[in-house]
Image (tube, rainbow, N blue to C red; front, side, top):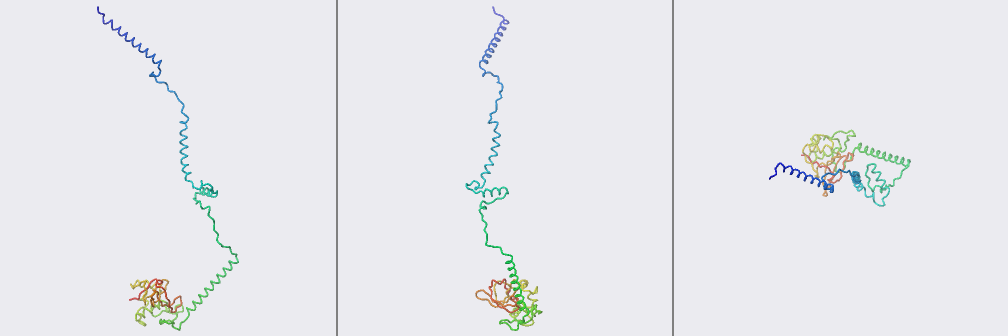
Length: 295
């Protein structure tokens, strides 16, 4: 006869529960015997930090400070580490660093050279001063005598080659006046103006070249170069017979001849303040400018 189903089901459930209990009991025993296999997490244990790890920031700071020091040490002058370096050089270097001044290493070896000057006594200085004053007084007297001899002399004998018609007239400083050409008698400009008239065929009134035509801007020799330029007359550095030799120290002369070596013979009045006829030979290069005869 068949067993009812209602009776079999409870028995199967009980068997299943028994098996589950047995498995749990086996697992518990296994966990006690083998703790590593247990899924439980062991409690955290605080371990002490190694000493080397705690001091690592201090080492980094020391390293960072030491690296610039190495570079600065490498940049010191060589003589600071040279064996046998003198104490003077080291002292000079330290003083220079303190004051912010760069001193050459060889400066300490410089020796001061002394000349042979010796001090003079007050008596010797007084004697020298007196001698200088006497020399100056003698020079001034000589210049005054020469000036008087030239300013107040009246030349009655014509020099050779001198064809200036007013050679014996009083000069401006002697109370003389202007010549018919408009310049003061026996000045360099009046003599040259006469020569330009003579070469143009005019030796008397009416004159071809007078002050108002030659140098209307002024009668001084310094005005002659600009007067030539204003009127478009030719100038140059090549000497020509009959040209005017113009000097920038307020003097003019007449070119008498040109030598083969390039020098020129000049005729002039009032050379060195003499107010007299004079001739001299100079190099053409000594003449700043030649003013060619006007047209």
